[in-house]
Image 1 (cartoon, protein in one colour):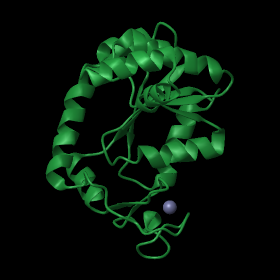
Image 2 (cartoon, rainbow, N blue to C red):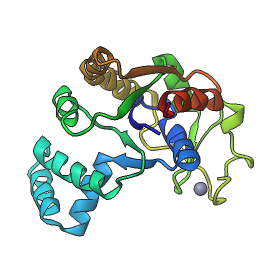
Image 3 (tube, helix red, strand yellow):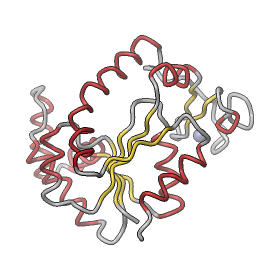
Image 4 (tube, rainbow, N blue to C red):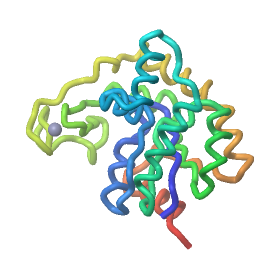
Length: 211
Ligand SMILES: [Zn+2]
């Protein structure tokens, strides 16, 4: 399977599709934000550098981010991976190309009004599973409780229409140059996610399957 750079606006179902890719094909999920937090927690040399930068309110410089990412990629050689929430800038996209070429970019495409509607219907569990009351296939089996662990489902704190609309607009503005960059390289695959999750998964599977 090919590596995936996963791009999606909020509420497009990236978590659900990532889990399906992990389960069916053994993908490793990489969130660069999580990697940075892990380095800090482990108090490695890079972790200490990251902590100092974050504590001073600055953004972590790209070379430090890439050093940490490269180290992690060396550890998972042989398995396909999903890069989630990264790159965030055009510069990062270009730098990434210096050591990564075997990948496809999957863009989960969802109109803003549809995304808002989904978000308003979304419930999450503390175990990480999320549900959607607006979709028969994504409802919990017992109303209000998690299928996995039985805990009570809650709305996410940041799930209100105004904050969500702002997040969505910010996402579109920031992603535009990155999207253009991958389009020009013929790496960009737009997936309409206003469909059944299994149909979406089938499309993604076709793109990332090795010939
Ligand atoms: Zn749960």
